Image (cartoon, rainbow, N blue to C red):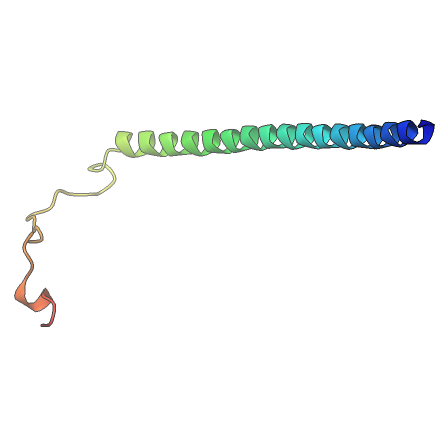
Length: 89
């Protein structure tokens, strides 16, 4: 009877240690994932800032002063397909 009880206690102790190891591993992975998300958010924020700066610069540019002129004529692509571009049948 004593050997069965000591065997059960040993199995329970090993199981307890194993469960603690699983919980610790989960905690480490959760912290690493949170840090990864924060790093990704910081990267996105940096890229967004660069994008908004570029858009503000493009919007504020005086293209006439930069040497650009308005086009003389505007040509648009037809919305319907042209015979030369239709698929072969």
